[in-house]
Length: 238
Image (cartoon, rainbow, N blue to C red; front, side, top):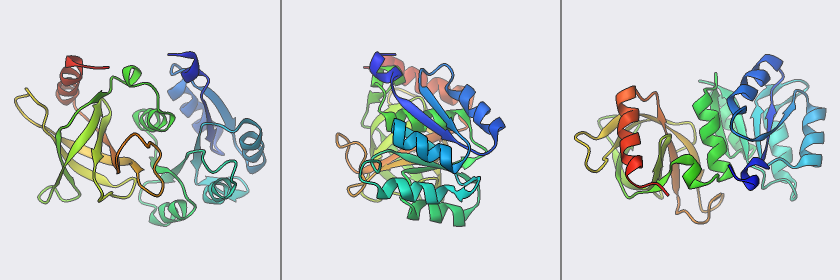
């Protein structure tokens, strides 16, 4: 990992220290500079003093709700460019709505999974494509909430963790999807579950080099499916 990548910082915010320690282990070998906070005062001090490159913010922390902190960040002209990822309990639609209203950049559902944290961090910190094993690829991707009614669009790139699909019809972050990706020179298409991990939208676009679209994370790939993606990526990474 390059010096530029290792200098990137991530702020982890949660009022349960056990969860913070768990999240710390997720990034232990990834080379990130980790900042930790468990209450509103620590959060605001760290954000103002260190201006982290990425914030993982739990919805429920001591003294204040996470969406209020997110709103404070997004209203400050010097801080609003910092990506804020909200951690919300799975199925808590009210918390999700409040997080989006506050201007969060993405939502992860608790209990968190290691791959979710790493995938989102890598996307928003724009780590090198070679580090990620990511490659440019125009692949037919079919997706939808109803497995019998799938939309069809083309990918821009693919990695072991998911695909970026170019489309004007983006779907809210966190939406679970049925997913089918046609990988060239593979006997069968990759059929699995997925989840919308992040959006590149004209109004809130994070990566100007990419078209409007969404990053879709692969969910619960079995070993055979992981091997399919790995074989395809092994053909030509850059």
